[in-house]
Image (cartoon, rainbow, N blue to C red; front, side):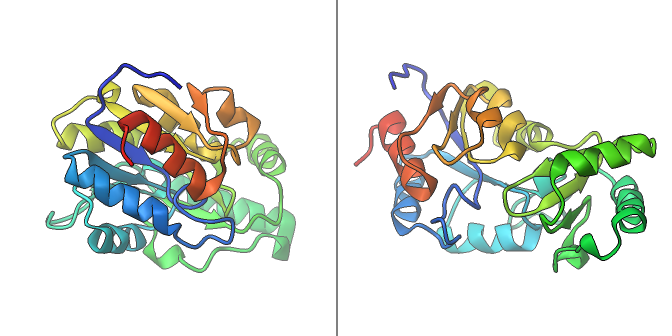
Length: 234
């Protein structure tokens, strides 16, 4: 992996990217993030997770960039008066109602709906393609994203690239100034938006196909592999 570009921002997914297969924070990945911050590289978390979880992570890891929650629907940084809400929850809630009417108890909501501003997360009990076809047949146009940990019903205007663009803008840079790393189907737009996109080895084919590079290692180990090579840190 030979990259001659200079990046000022690292935008990274969290679950499956900074974690182990058991979804525990990979401590060497945390150490690498601290090294990047010490070098003046802004680290931005971009996840399907809820805002309060990402802000907590931001605080304890000491990152300087804003966080992007709900697959691009919400952007926030500690110290801001309020979050930037980039989507609406109206259509996701309508989609949830239709799916429950169609599939009954097979549709199970995640336990964090109260904290979500723009999307609805449901457990992966029904595959994404089936859910998409059902909603299309009902005339509901919505983004259905699979993070590998949940299925997200999102405002049709929302995906990670929207949040990435806004977050990087607040730092005074453009998308091409950023390196992106991810491992899920919901990271496709993230990798397409940034100047250079890396998919981890545990990523699905759809993400690897749009990536500029695919790591040899998986999960947090793959993240460390990518960052150490791009930013030449040890």
